[in-house]
Amino acid sequence: MTEPANSPAPPNGAIAAAVLSCSLGCFVLGVLAVAADGSKALAAALNFYKPSGPLSGVTTVAIILWLILWAALAARWRNQTVAFAKVSAFAFAFLTLSLLLTFPPIGDLFLSR
Amino acid sequence: MELTYRELVTALHGMLFGGFFLMALFGAIVLLLDAKRESPAPTPGWQSFYLLAMVTLGWAAVLSGAYIIYPWYRAVAPPGADLALFPKALLTAHSSTAGWHTIGMEWKEHVAWIAPMAATMVAFVLLKHRAAWNGHRQVRTTVLGFAAAAFLAAAIAGGWGAMINKKAPVQGGLTYQILGSAK
Image (cartoon, rainbow over all chains, first blue to last red; front, top):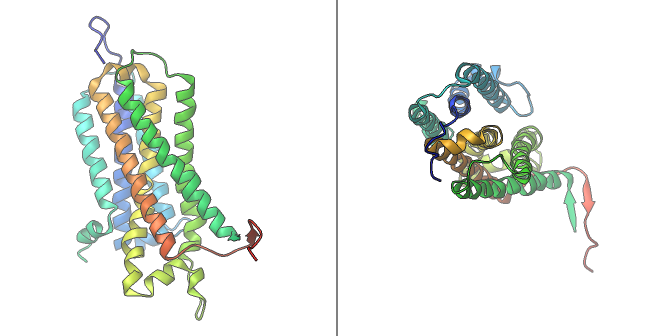
């Protein structure tokens, strides 16, 4: 698509907030998955729904933090144009880490198993 | 020809919610690639419906998996129980099948959630900020990358789910007669 030459591009702050908060939420999910696997106390604390075990708490906490972050960043960056390249780089870094952390052999490396 | 209640719900989770979510994500990626050539315009009505359906399918897949099927899968088998009704216990009882749980299920149960989270973000951007999405090349590339990551996560989860259910099917509950048995 050709970028419009004369009309300024609309602000990208709301999109940056959505992208960054999503990646951070996914990263929290990955970190909590590994941490709950390595700590019985944390696993017990995250056992929100006993039949599903710690998975219920890991995902609930990650989703709640994602939505809070999204709301906070959206309020801060609304109607602003931010350095999207930086936001995108951070977002992809967190997203990649979250995908890696969910892979059990990589989680086990952090837990020295 | 019979189907148990748990087999039916597992099929809905994997084949209806998960399968259609995966197909919808692939369609969204095609949409994102194709939309680069469009002029800035509001999201067409059918695309709004499509994206909302995609997100709904994604959340239905992970929620039904985590809160309905996973409890059946991980239920603790009482001593002397038939392990065929306790898939996790069945898989971990033998070293040759334990990996299906320790790698497959443990990866699937977490990575799956990345897919609807990323898909929700992609749909939000396309539905609410189409003009900004059209106006910034970097934004388009990033959103496409997240859609691809969502597809990857959903494919990993779906692939492992299908294979694990072949090795140790979730079964039990009421039995439904689908068609008359062949004589």
